[in-house]
Image (tube, rainbow, N blue to C red; front, side, top):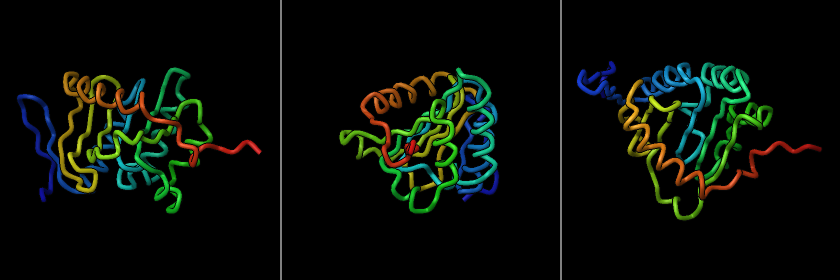
Length: 168
């Protein structure tokens, strides 16, 4: 494991390895969001999203404008519900800005995890169980490619009934 983030000068790619680096990068990316945050993974990843710094940042982002949008597509939220993930109450309160969907069967074999910010920043792990991968604060071409994948998954996903707020 590396102790510091390494950057490749030619394409501004940041290579990371480890939970702390992944958490710090995710927070840095979310802080720069202006219009859209998209996430795909097996669940609402606890390393990335189950701490107050990132939840506060997502909350501020979602409340900033009626044009901001946060979209999560995951295989399942059951583990998140069992562990009382701190993002879930926020998503229930801000249901017009924060959307949580679950994947269709055809996408259940996908094991990567990625976070997309607007049209230019991303974080990508080839395996959602290993916090090692690459990120960039400004790579429109890679974000475009990942956003096409995300859109395909999103278009076949359904709203997660487990995380909806019950209006009783």
